[in-house]
Picture 1 (cartoon, rainbow, N blue to C red):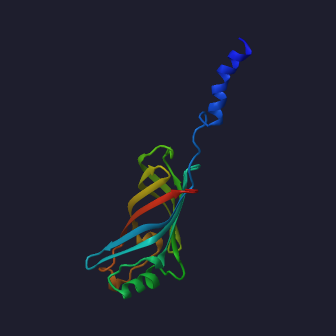
Picture 2 (cartoon, helix red, strand yellow):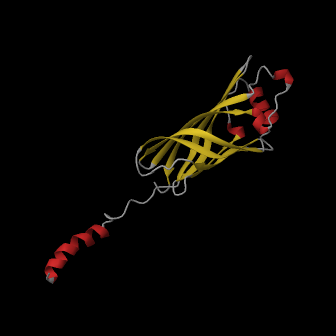
Picture 3 (spheres, helix red, strand yellow):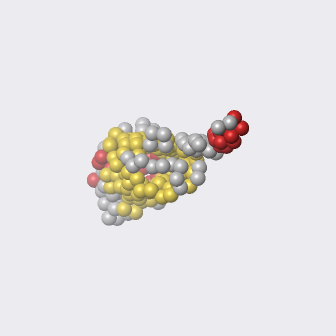
Length: 191
């Protein structure tokens, strides 16, 4: 094979490599969120208490399937009254002493973050609330859409797991287990 013929065969490969055609696209991430939403509901015999925060912050690192979420406890609003919010922060969550709730850990399932789609995953990690850490596995819906991720989850948390006590006088107004819903949109870093 002469030199000209070798060049004709070799040149397209050089061109494709220089354009990145033989390399897989770089892994996006980490993904970050600064304004996710957390809704909580306490449905007791005599009272329904609901509140929300739009200050959920979090990150997901696709290189090792890890995540970290945090929300300031005093960022919740929407209670039935200002007094109820005050009791939530001072008597139950003790926000001055324990200013945030966090959940950190790893996504159990392997996800290809380069392929758009919806996935049901289990997030395994440590849920820290009211100074007490508990290991939890929380089922979540994860949607990959280009350089964005959407996370949705619903789960319950028994107050006793985090040493949050309910005075006997209000035990019919505060549920022993609260329901939580999470909605977050995360953006890949650099986008």
